[in-house]
Length: 189
Image 1 (tube, rainbow, N blue to C red):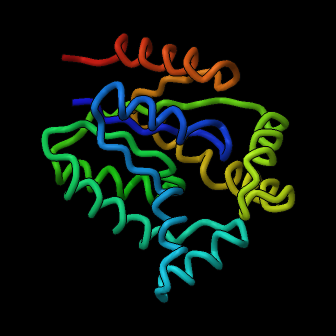
Image 2 (cartoon, rainbow, N blue to C red):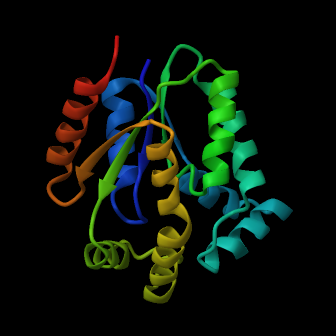
């Protein structure tokens, strides 16, 4: 069973690669970005709250995200592997995820780290043209990533998790083939 986290700054291609991997490897794919964007379309108190947070370019609080991920994994993985896209984004979320996975007897995760420079990220996100992708908000999200989310990678390194670093610049299928090749080299059967 493959247990993957796709990781990297906003706009690096996590969603695209996670979707391809979920199709090719028959994985449960959970994208926090897609889930949260769908939530903002609902006329609920939580939907409005999340929309305000995302429109400011901020992160949804850890306790909310941890509960969402716990429910998603408990209700969807069964005998399937999974790929998480956009979570964890803080060290506290990574610690909570470790506890969730331990309770489900799902250790030995692999972190796929897509690496792309800031200029490329800015270009990609501006082309995407979503409401939460203005240049000002993108730059704020990159600062938050560097101050908060990048520390998750350090946490996983310090705790001996397997990290596969992939250059995220290139053709989508080429990047995907590189990811699959590296996963196969690192999986213990």
